[in-house]
Amino acid sequence: MPHAPSLQPPARVLLGPGPSNVHPRVLRAMSMPLVGHLDPAYLRIMDETRRLLQFVFHTRNDRNDGLGNGAQYSNAELDALIQQSATETDPAKLEAIYKRAHEILMFEDPAGLYAAEPQEEILLASSVKGHSWNPIHVKTFDFYALYRE
Image 1 (cartoon, rainbow, N blue to C red):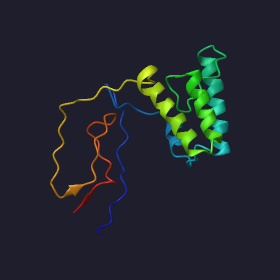
Image 2: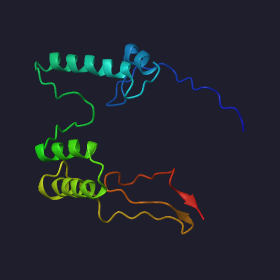
Image 3: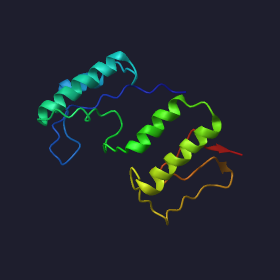
């Protein structure tokens, strides 16, 4: 396999609608080592980010944690079911808990409504297998799942 040289794009001032220049401080931050989402360092960074967001938006709201529930969805019954499922060991009781949670999320109090393109067609050779349609990620492929027979 031939060796590909490192990219060395020229420095330019970008004045169009986008992309735009990035401040050197941001570039330095983006080149820092990565940490996992459960790493204590990450949690400290998220705590500091939350405090800064509270300052910027003049709030004491602790729910702006940025840890996944961006819409701040909350349902007391569903929360109780999730807590209950964490300790339940009886498979029949777990099934009932999950069924009830499904009813809440799908029919009574959906956390989100995703609109898809029903006429979307994806043409693949008949030898390509493993593709599954995902209404949230229309026009995307899970290349790890694809294989050829």
